[in-house]
Image (cartoon, rainbow, N blue to C red; front, side):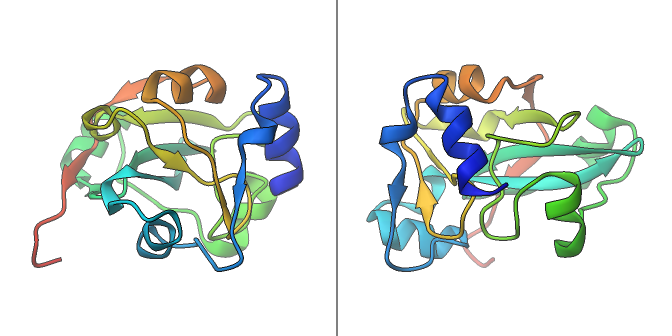
Length: 159
C-alpha cells in the first residue's frame, strides 16, 4: 500500500497532484517541519492505536502529545500504540508514513482538536518523504474521519 494507496485515495478528491515529495526524510515531526520550512505544530502526525481489537488512527498537531486520561475517557481504554511491525499489516502504511489516506478496510480515523489551532496542516501521504497541505476541514472530509476528539495536550517547552 503506502504512497500508492494514499495517492489513489487523494485522486478521488482531485488532490493526488498536490502531494509533496521530498528528497530528504519527513518521517518525524521535526524532519517534516524542516522539509516543509514550517513550524512543528502544523505537521499533522498520525498516531496508531489498538482499541477494542481494531486499529484506529488519531491525527494530531505535531506540537501535541496523547493525554492518557483524555484518551481513556474518549475510547474507554488505556492507549495501546501499534508496533512498527503491526502498522503495515493492520493499517496499510509503514512507520514514518502513516497517514489517514488509503487505509486498509475497518481502520477508523479521528482528528484531535489540536489541529483546529491552524488554518492548514501537513499530514503524511503514505511514505517517509511525503505530505499534503490541507485545511483541517478538508482533512476531515478527505480522510472520512469518524469525528473530532480531545485526547491530546500540548507538549511543554522542556519536552
